[in-house]
Image (cartoon, rainbow, N blue to C red):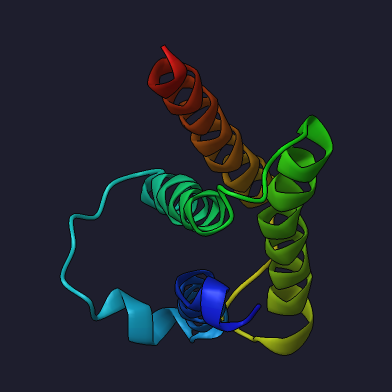
Length: 122
């Protein structure tokens, strides 16, 4: 099971690092800085994470139940990371708004998956 989800695990580890690394270390990375950029990053990270999970498990998604379970993995992972940011770091804080943008990225990927799946059947 781990070998079949190596990209998902790698993505989760990258998100874990980015979520718990000090904000000073991340601010040294040269990117465009504008208000709300972190929310866009949350959307992109969790959209990508969900997309990878869906891609790696596409042959096992036979019911709505399995699709929902797979979509809940990045949601609860993100919720845990928001809590860990508050508890374990001094330069980061957990935010309900970050969690909402994580959720929007997750839902975006699920919608894209469903559209692609329905299109490929025709």
